Length: 166
Image 1 (cartoon, one colour):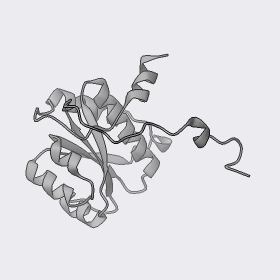
Image 2 (cartoon, helix red, strand yellow):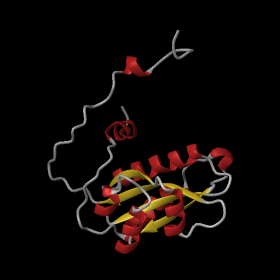
Image 3 (cartoon, one colour):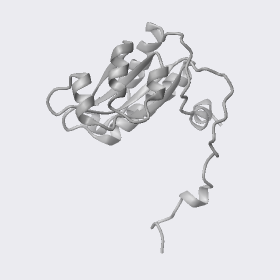
């Protein structure tokens, strides 16, 4: 089993971070990994907004409902869907950022910005640009906490062949 495969299986969203800032070197590495994410027809219809100012993070949190990870993290990377961009590409982008963060010893948590109008205003988005998702990034706080998570559904509940049922 390859290291890449093991990394994919162990990747988890982390919601607690230390106060240690993310270095410029680590941020550059994450943004480079994001830049190299594959996209439909290689159009790369996305851009990124790094939000690390505490006051701006607080404003950004008004755009979503479950924003505690952003409040706790030193920064968030907002994934801007450029005009005619695809949701699927933004999902690929999010996963690559999270895998890259894990690979360099950082933790991450994806969040949804539920209120498009607030995100548009806070991030000063123009035209048909949209930001629906962001990734909280920081150094993991490894203090043990009960997770309440129960693992994964059995594979036979998830996989179907040729049709979904019937």
